[in-house]
Image (cartoon, rainbow, N blue to C red):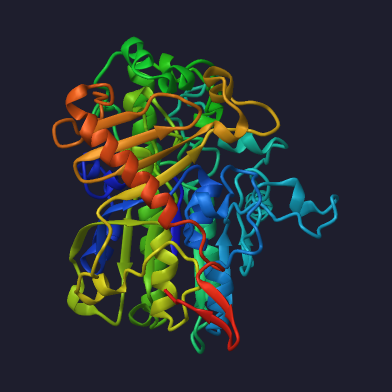
Length: 507
């Protein structure tokens, strides 16, 4: 299971796809089932991975922000794969903040949001903020001067005796020594000697997550002049006036880690800077693709490729300047729409097909467990995708996606809490997206959003206050309420204590 960080779906199939060289992912697609309408259930990294690993919507697992603990009560892919006889190996990170129940306050696991989800054995630790010491140590052993401040690792190296690095200047490390190459090398080493027994591995790459800096030659692989421009149907002044969310989004500097030295003013980035960032983002994806090619090649060399289920996905997307936004805390599709490719060696007849049904990150765990012959835990919100892998369409499949985003901080109120005038528990919103309509409901009394995606694929015109769409607004708000009521956590409520003991309704 390969999970990358912050990769949009349209890099593989959509507006950006033609401009990015990804020969290895495209080759994998030809041997796999590709799910073109796949969406994360929430953002940012920690919550998105909590949904991916538990199969639960955020309203049920409640690890709703980076640093919000993930309860040990929730089964994960890893805890359940252990029941199938696998040791779940982790190469990289899960960003699962530790459940503090029964843990001493001084325990180091309670000092970082970048914890390990229950059930995983951490083979290689690679955490952007708190735990890349193995990679840093390797860089040091190779003669690199390692800065004391870890963020300085992502400082581009100025060229031509300039003291002011450009965004597209190369990283201080070579492509052979990048964090992406390091994680690939360590994974290949470990798996190369695991040829006599079944294994399960989650390989979690940091890239193309910011800070946006790439090693040579990927830093200049794409010309800023040639990359597509962001999707911006309004001026920044008009954008801020469209809804309180936009005005709050831009009300103060944010996303300071976008690139080294960024001042956080997303709305003030020049066209040249935007193009340069997007070009580096493309380069990071190509670097990732090259390393995935090496990883797939190592499986082939070991004779394991045709015996291995391969899942490729991303935790969430990246706005990449669309609507002047950067990052992933947005209701627009670029933040939520992510790739999903599944290569099933048992079902070669479906190789190369694409699926247009709505699928979500919560479905991945159920798919993997069913493939491994393991019972899917009670209460899981996701549905197994295995029928698609076998060439059939499941009955009564969903016709929409649902996501929830939390914008709060229980310690220091966020700009959204302050601008909206809402409490921690009210600073959130939910999204229900069908093929034609997208409905966004904000907590705390804020006005909703309604987009007709058939007529307005840019999600530019809010129709929520248009009387002609009052019926659609009512229908979608009712559908969202029905969804929440239907998908409340049912791990125990589907059971009944009887004279014969515990009986369950099952899935």
